[in-house]
Each structure stands twice: as structure tokens, then as C-alpha cells.
Length: 294
View 1: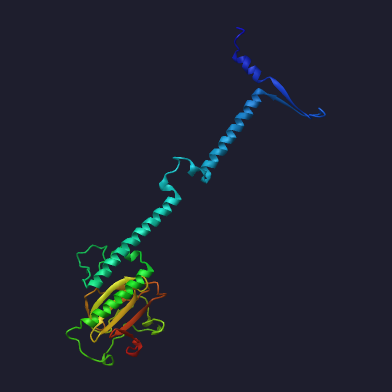
View 2 (view 1 turned 60 degrees about the horizontal axis):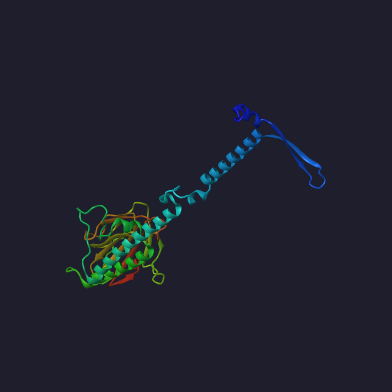
């Protein structure tokens, strides 16, 4: 039928050659001549479309452009979202610490007894009712203030509540047991607020109580690590800091020469195994070297 074009005729038309001539518009000089067919044009157009699609897909998969495509990426996998979530969690933890610290400070101000750790307590509570989260996420400013307040509290309690068997002896009449034997790397310096001596000793050396007394502090701080405080007679308090392990808890009675801790290197103010030892008499620090031969 003359009104219809068969498939063979269409195929033949696609293969009919054409010549594309490029001429100078002014001189009509032939610049170039190209032999083309409709089939070649279709193939070239398809190749250009395929190359364009490939470039677009590569840009989407290997460049940040993909995050602007709606629904392509889960918001929880977005880098900015992850950073904001971490900051929010950090703020929540700090807020919980400040609430706990404020509650503890209120107990101190109002004279309420603090919670003590008993054998039935869960493992996530420390002596004094401080949870592990506070231990693992210490804030330097908070630690410094808390340590100062606790020291003042210990001193005030020791001065206001003397023991019944307290004897009014001069400090020079007391016989002190050396907590450890070793070389002193840093002495007592009141001006530099170094209220004790640093004694070097081998790792795992046991630390001994200098006098009979009762443990009034057994805790961990960011700067001094595992710290132990013992209340003695005659308004005397001794502190043992940077320990690797504490062998006594608050309320324990200790005897002079009894092991109370293990020497260590805990806390940010420590740069090697040693004992930072302090003596406080009548609410003031004294030089331990005046009374103890290390």
C-alpha cells in the first residue's frame, strides 16, 4: 500500500548518507565536509545522553550534592546531626553532674549526713553517693571547687567534733610512722600551694598510716586521683594522694603502720608513681619533713 512505510524502508532511510559541508559565509570556500547518516546522528545523541546521565550519577554518589536530594539520606546519618547529638548528650551529662553537686553542697550547708556505700549497694554508686557518671566525666573547675569544699568540711568537722580519747599532746611529742620510704622529689611549699611532699617509690608499694585514726575521706578526684584522708587525735589529719588503689573506706579504723593504699600515678597532677603526702594540724598544713624521716 502506498500510504504506509514499511520497516525496511525506514531502515533504509536511516542508512541513507548525507554530506554536511561547512563553508565560509563570505568567500563560499569549503572549510570541511562530513559524511553523515541519520543512524550516526541517533547513535551520537544516545551516547551524549548516556554520558550526561553517567556524569550526573557520579556527582550524586561521590560528592556532597547527594545530601540536598530530598529523601536520599537519613537525618541520623548526617554529620551535623551527629555532632549536635553528641553536644546535647554532653550538656545533659554536665547538667546531671551539676544537679548532683548542688544537692551534695546543700547537704553540706544544712548539715545533713551524706549517703554512705554499704555492701548491698549497687556497683554504680561510689562512697559518698557519687555515681560513676560523675567519676568518668569530671569537670576541672567543678573538681577543684569540690575538693576545696570537701577539705574545708573535713577540717571543720575534725575541729568541731573532737574524739573522746583525744589527748592534748604537742605535735612534736607524736611518733609518726613513715607512709613510704623513698626520695622526695618535691618538698613542702606554702607559697606555691604545695601543701605536702612528693615521695618517689616503686610501683605497687603499700602506703601505711602514719598514726592511729579513722578514715574520713576515700574518694577519686580528677587532679589527685584516688585520695585517702585519715583523722587522727590531737586535731591531726593526714592525706594520701595519687594512689593506684585504696584499701580502706570511710569510717574504717586504722592503726599506725597499717597499709591503707597502694602507691600509683592517678590524677592529672601526677607524672609518675609517687605519693603526695600532706599533714594538717589544727586546720593548717604543716611540713611533713619536720616530723617524719622518709
